[in-house]
Length: 154
Image (cartoon, rainbow, N blue to C red; front, side, top):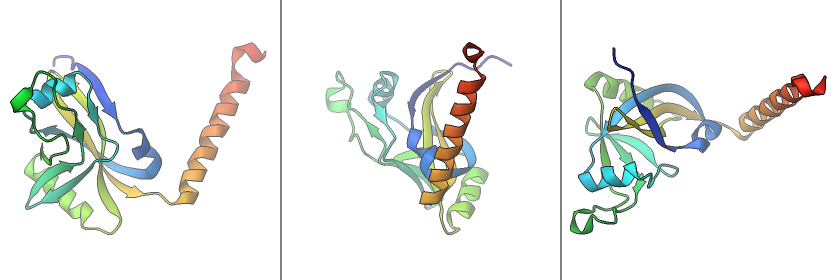
C-alpha cells in the first residue's frame, strides 16, 4: 500500500476544548475548482462551522472559503452549504447519533490527502464548564511534571 501524503490546511482547535469527541470520520467535500485552489492556498476557516444531515445527505454549514483572487466570475459564496461525501452506512450511523439529545457533528480538520480535499468530522457531546476546568487542571499538572522531570533540573 502506498504512503499517504497528508497536509493539514486548517484545524478547529476549540473543538477538543468545547466537546467530548466520540467518533471521528473522514469525508470528502463537493467543491468547485476555485474553492479547491483557495483551500490549497490555506484560505479556509472552520471555527464557526458545523455539520448537519438533511434528507439523508450530510452537509457542512458555515465553513468559510475565501474567494480565489484569479477566480472572477467562477467564485462562489464563501459561506455556502457544501455537501459531504460519505458512505450511506456512515450517514445512517451519524443520523442515529445526532438524533440523540446533546450530540452534534463538529469539523476537526481540513487537509489534503493524496491531492484531494478531505474533512475530518467528529460525533461530539458538549462539555460543561466544570469539565473544561478539569481538562485545564490536568494539562497544567502534566506541564509541571514535565518541567520537573527535564534533564536540566538535575
